[in-house]
Amino acid sequence: MVQQSVSLSVEIPEELHNSVQHYLEVHSGWGQDRLFCAALSLFLMQNGVTHRQVSRIYLDSLFGQQPDRNKEVMPSNA
Image (cartoon, rainbow, N blue to C red):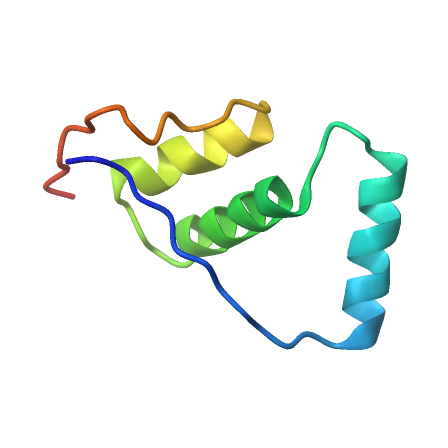
């Protein structure tokens, strides 16, 4: 299975957007995509999702590794 990306367009409260922008300005190693991947995958794990790939995406985003979108991924039965 090849990991693919999708583009999302979402509306968030302005206060949250301002906080995200400030965080990204202060932490130059982080980008919006990395931040949202980390946040979404952590939310899913904290709410019972046990798929290995979600955990992998979280760890990769946390430690600044870009997922290899051309790399084949073993499917998880979890």
